Amino acid sequence: MTSQASPSPATPATLSEWLALLEQRHFKQIDMGLERVMQVKQKLDIRFDCPVIMVAGTNGKGSTCAMLESILLRAGYRVGLYMKPHFLHFNERARISGDMASDAQLIAAFEAVEAQRGDISLTYFEFTTLAIMKLLADAGQDVVILEVGLGGRLDAVNVIDADVSIVTSIDIDHTEYLGETREEIGFEKAGIFRPGKVAVCGDPLPPQSLIAHAEKIGADLWLMGRDFNYQGDKQQWAYGGRGMRRNSLAYPSLRGANQLLNASAALAALEALREVLPVGAQEVRTGLATVELPGRFQVLPGQPLVILDVAHNPHAAATLAQNLDNMGFHPYTYAVFGSMLDKDIEGVIGHLKDKIDHWCVTDLPLPRAATAQQLKDALLGAGVAPEFRRDAARSIETFTSPADAYANALSRAGENDRIVVFGSFLTVAGVMQARRPGLH
Image (cartoon, rainbow, N blue to C red; front, side, top):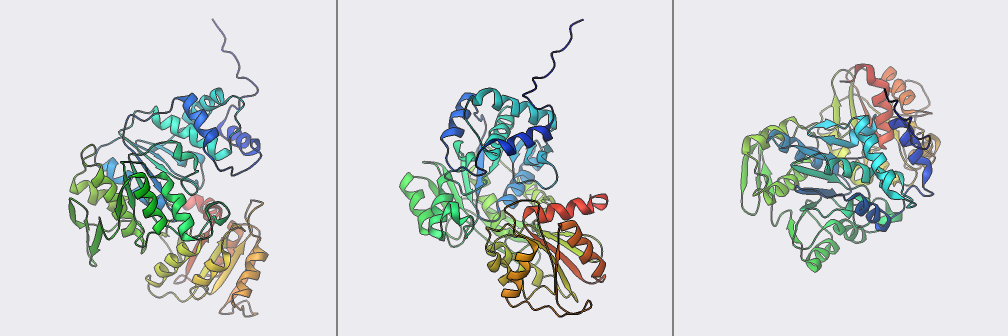
């Protein structure tokens, strides 16, 4: 009987140990550039023997990826999906044929990257992106969907040449890396386009820089309003593309004002791939009607109503404000709000300050997060004036965690009120964790 060799002490044994190691390893959390990632990708021989759809954008990336996955799964395809960030489990980032990757699958992929990287230093995001792309490439999928993390041109995902690239929306975010204007940011997003390949832009007002880059490299640019569009009434909607129409469509189960823009961009990508990935009308209808994605204007059942939304920049906050307006009357709205310090906190508050009566602002467990006191100061600076009574019509209270902030809002809200949890993914994740025994 032969005994198995024990694992090397340098190699973590569990997924949580791997992630803890990767968080400490590289000297910078974000280190823009593709050279190091490309070297390791080539060593790993990552290649996809199926169509690849890549999705970038300031907002709407996750929704678009989820709709594509839902429709393609309904059509019987094996779909690989890479999304980020995660809420409760890292495994949420990698999906194979509709199922989350297991710890064992991810650990094997991490070990493969570790074996090939040599002395090349990789950030947490770069290392995990390579591992998940290796996992998806080896999983024998019919189509793979890759969500871009930051920008596009210099994002680690962009070492792959996509068959169809989608840019959902362009707005001001991550200015220290992507630029201060929509024109600068649009150029970064357009970096995922490829010569001779379809490039879909779902933003109704695309920056000229995106259009110019697509034309310069010879991408086949599909623009919302020119090459595809949508129309609808209260019951149903229709998509019109370059060569096909899809009528009598169900509204996406993802709620919110911008979801038809995202759905239309997804359907444009599927139209472009219809020769290799044909999808029937019923699969589109059912896929849209059943798609699920946590934290994107996610309305939880029960009273008071609870809404989870990862709106963390002004563009997303404006959409959230519109969605709250469309919900009908609620006597009071409570907010659980936490944010990274590098976000346009004043811009986010500006869109929502007239929609919210009681603010429960929270610290977050990251050094680069804004403190609850900084958020309170921003609210006061924006003219949100609390009344100094516990039962007052307006209030601002500070908390050390999203769970504590949520517990406070829940204790004060009446059954006809609503609680909106928004801002950083960590804010929403903290409340998800607190609600977990009752969360399905």
